[in-house]
Length: 215
Ligand SMILES: O=C(O)[C@@H](CO)OP(=O)(O)O
Image 1: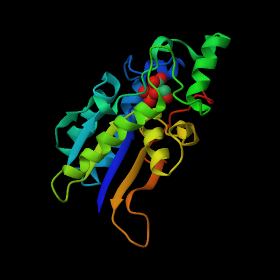
Image 2: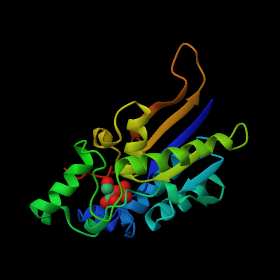
Image 3: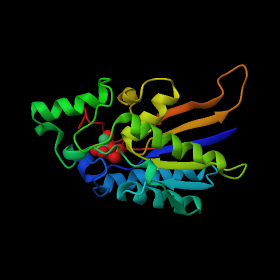
Image 4: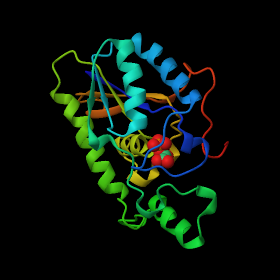
């Protein structure tokens, strides 16, 4: 059975300021770096053989800290990027107009092909995230990869593994530097394919990141 660990990057400047990042980027805060060190300490105990990261700066930085602790290199995979949030990237979520808020809502209310102008749909993101996860099946037998990605991207991946629609991703609270695990199994009796073992574990963090509601 292949076990794959999934980590969201550490807290960033724009996470703390409630600004939308998407495929734009901002640096880790001091707290975000500490979270990355703490998740790295945890990863060290898990026998990680590969660290594979979204190529955005915040995930790369987090992945480098984890990879160093695990004594492996980082491989970049652009399929692990956050949802492309088009014209709303860099904006503060508290200052959106009603029309802009409507675009954002289309992402999470089941509107077929809902997207922010110039952005990506949840379905498109789901397809590239599954392709990146399935690529782990080609690693040598006995590998234990850890993927570093983003809140919506990982939420979408796990909700679709559970059989929920891609836009159900916000039903999973995946805080900065939380660890989740998905396993690939073959079983006639239980589910075959990917199953979710853990979602959003933050027991290794001494100061958990607050989510958008709590900031
Ligand atoms: O892009 C963003 O602003 C957030 C959305 O949840 O994602 P992340 O901080 O995980 O990249």
